[in-house]
Image (cartoon, rainbow, N blue to C red):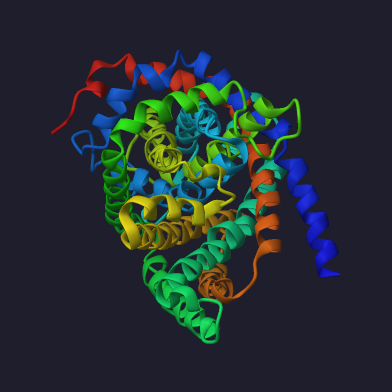
Length: 468
């Protein structure tokens, strides 16, 4: 019965995350890129200046700084996709999948800009809280611009967010942490007795550490994320750069292989005859979206809490997310795998990444990947909690409901650490798709509003000058 249900859910997931949705996200990104006048290229340098703190205005509405907002959003996106997701894309679609991940991130930057701009414009700010995200611009933005009542679509998005959060943001991440740390602790004995106890202890510790953070709300989540996310990213990057430095002579060939196989489908072992290039593109786009979440509508909820009265300013900050997540961190993982030559070895996911690092860094490479996977997954746990809370808050705005949601979140971390989660993965994929659909509709309908905010922002020279 369970196996049959899992098969059905997986089939639904494959349909939702098939070519049509991936093309819808890509097409939306291309449309917003053109309409914004290449916002991700023209204002890229200024976006980095914004997170320096020199543009922060403590007197503006909001609860967290630009840097904290970006760190919170990245804490939820930098995770298993950067280690396991990249490896899966290359193992199935060949090295060329990396090129299509880059393309997804490039256009995803325009999507992130638009969604975060709209999230700030239509948010509700009080002294104690900020309510913002796709559900608010779906309801308020579409009503303001067109006079249509799309609250039902906003409710659908919020419900999908709350459900998806328990899966992809909670149990799946807890399971990844338990996998990584139990293998690190037990080594070759990971399949023997004592595994359940170790995973249970890991789950309990993880639940406790997560509870300490989420009980403090967005300010504490942002504070932890702004320290944890940069630290873990730098440590992982240093490990990857060490491997690449040891193999500097292979880098030109690896990069050439990525570009060449993007258009030939070389080594795309998951494809059927005659569809190698299409399969490579699909794997690259799918894993790119999974990694940076552009189009899903998650990051706007974090960026809506930023201290700013200028919606486009936070939109520019938000568009750095796909660049850092996919073009920087995912590329490092990809190059390590490609220079190792193990992408055609039959390995897949995190084991492929771990073995690629270990080939050059011995056991230290496996330790690095295991610890990075654990830290990335933990950061995703706290980041996705905030998204789930925002979904529940929109549906049932009552403090007691939020308290019970926190409690359930902590309990399910322990469950996720010890359970088998194939069905949870599939259900999460389904509801992630359900999040993307209403968000893409809103972005198409309200893209012009975000562009007007951008024009208003850049037309005032004082907005482009630091205040400190």
